[in-house]
Length: 472
Image (cartoon, rainbow, N blue to C red; front, top):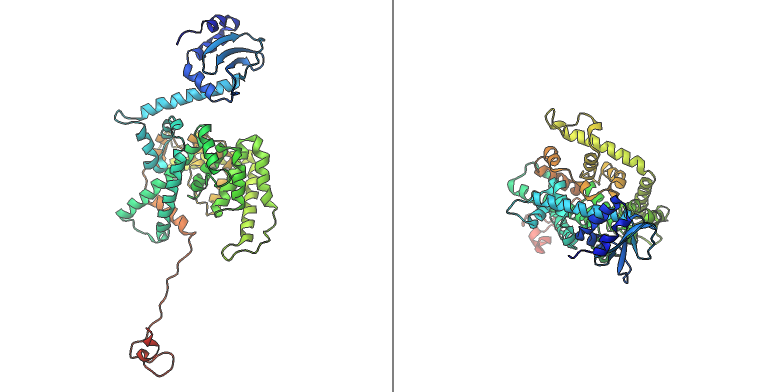
């Protein structure tokens, strides 16, 4: 690329530090292109001002929309061009640096005989042991995924539900796991956790990718229900986190889902989604609160309930869940502190089985790093059909709403030391969780049939074969 001589000659208008920063931009064409691609500019804007300090007073670096450097304006030299403030500029450059670090990590994670597809396979074969390094490495290619994580999540969630419906009925009777059963349980485990990982990747995508998901479901479906339907606290919290990432455009959709839920999990998913959006986007908090408050004081529906739906019960459950989420929104700091304390306690319990002196065996809560304590709660697969699991999902909502995608994953060394290898008992426990929600099928008892030559039980005095037995 030829040198922008006019720009270079005007660098004497700024300080030495500002010159160094301006030159770092000049030498990094890809970073400047990234910045220009990720800001909203008027369609007719041919040039843009990059502020080196004050957004109004400057100084400014002037570039074309394509990223070519034009000139440098000293502090006080006003411009009427669209301006990218220094704060926004630094944030976008930090994102560039983070993406490059993830790319480097991805290269280190791959063996010489592997490519990026091998990284993606980890989503489907590592289950709950999918590590923070896996997430960071794979997220380096997030811009290439488009809608793939979201659409694939829907396909896998449907498969998980279909398989689970067949396995959950008899799970409580299993005392010995045969090899073929273990294989089926492992497959179910991998599919279920892949749903969780793909939900996070869908929420971690670029703004344009998330907007496409929003456009796909707007006013129709909850984009996070399929993840929440796996019925563990971490699945609900990942859904709430993704809802917060999708943003306030989905408030009407979650409001509609809260009013017309698919089931009890659908109620919970919609209420947590509204709360998470309000927590992550200050400008949306009032709107999210109103959507919840509308159902707290709402009278029972006047229409008579259908034979298979108790509308009054649904209205009561909806009011209760909405009220619970509103309480969480009123006590964010208290919940954050409680969740951090709980996470540290969980980490100490995880490390108890490790030998003395192991770096991941924490003798006291104070020694547990905050990020690991946060992950302990966010990654915990608690039973939401029981009060403790539902309470944990509610209390952890503020932590989840403002988390980063990688916060749902332990570092690889931590996951290996604390979680060990997968066992069929893990998935059996989840199957039994669902089994509790299924209607019991009582065995049908057949009445004893008289013999052909026995007296007919009707009292006619005839033989069975000559009387009612003739019909048989």
